[in-house]
Figure (cartoon, rainbow, N blue to C red):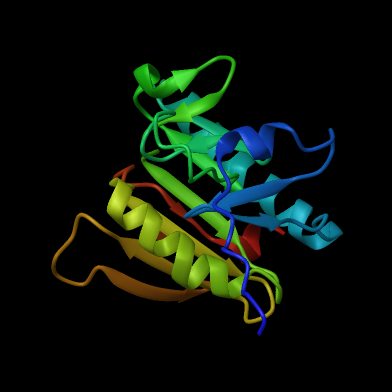
Length: 185
């Protein structure tokens, strides 16, 4: 007779014990290790985050943009079983920023850039967590398909839209701002 070991539930403390340079996310107590991003992934992240940064600065906005690795504790640091490092995070409430830890609570806008190994996390697990936590806007950028899935969790009508890289993608949290990814690359 074999005994199946009980599945271990990990906590943020386990993530904090990882060796420096090892990146992982914690979703519902399960650790998911993250591979180093490709060069195109990095270029895409830099181009999009730069466009957001430039827009915020030129409009003297109070929001701040961060790129991975940036710690996000969706339900605050008291929830010890979820820890994420989105590719791009926009936080408009300075009270949520903890200089030593990252963001404690739901950011206003999160952008994840998928890879074949992370797509199911981005479209399923993370999307559920982001929606439940109160993230207002969530973009899933697929370099392979050259498309962007936009989820506006606060909208009950038309909360989901899909765009190609060559289209102007309106940013819901910043009225009058859109991003055309093809023009950035």
